[in-house]
Length: 113
Image (cartoon, rainbow, N blue to C red; front, side, top):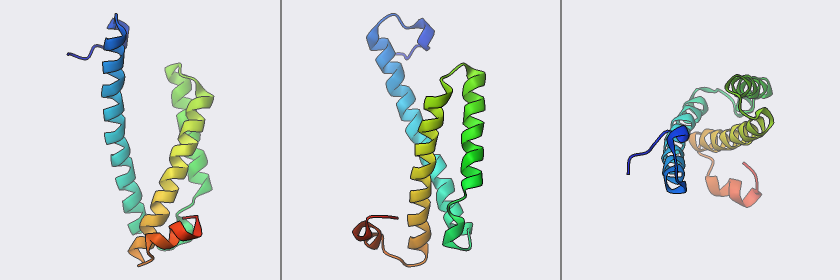
């Protein structure tokens, strides 16, 4: 089945096919984003540099502006990006520790990254 643009869909099967295709693309983009977290973990000299609240605020402000410009709901997208950034920070902390020889299991037993 050829995936149609949203405005051209006339059935739920077409809508679902489009959503599934976008989800695949999103996962590929997230993998690309997390590869940058691996790079950041390699580049940052100290673990405390992983969490950067000013950068987090900048990323979320950028998403708010882009959502507004695209006519999308700003608050839900900002909340989604907050979760994405927090997941990215957790991932980067684990990657940073792994590079330093800290085992991931010590994170899991402590209940925190």
